Image (cartoon, rainbow, N blue to C red; front, side):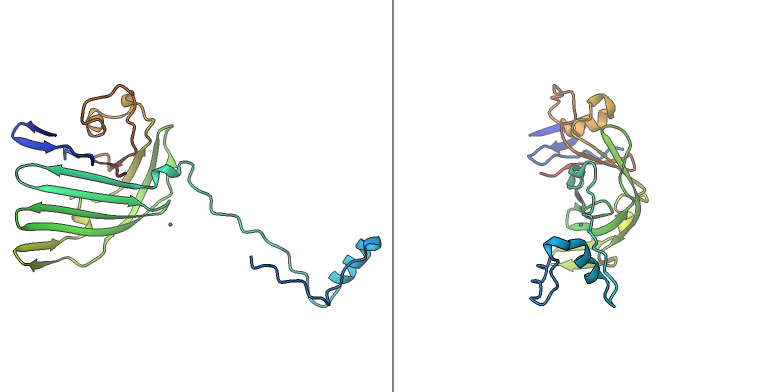
Length: 219
């Protein structure tokens, strides 16, 4: 669907658009020479086995890594915008509690500005019933900044710090059950581009960066 807004053309497709506003060894078979306790006196025999020159090794159980209370937030999110001057696409994947990767690309004619990046997060904390947040500890580019011309296209590899023109500080993730009343009208327009808000919820996972830039789940 193509919709004109004040000279700007916003195209909606299957992927949500974004209008830029504002990670036992089988126990070895017991040796045939192992001492087997006598059923009639197991306490005595067990004591004899442990009373060797070698200290007994305490058995340990490795606890599995605990998953986040809401592991659904770890997914890929996307943002897409288009107008008469340029189009850009950003994808961010939350890998786990502590890391993320992403790709940014903005094109204007034969000029393409792009960046593949990765970063580290502080642990996600539950901010409210529907919102999780994490501090962005670092964000780096996967390749040095520079320019490369391939055919008629000039690629500008930019630094990760330029992706949003501001230093990234905070991520917030809204879950699908978040009521429309708990988010801004701008977010509602992103998650319900067709204007259908009958469910009363945002219905998708929504990633908000610095409370300014929104990305919708990519599924």
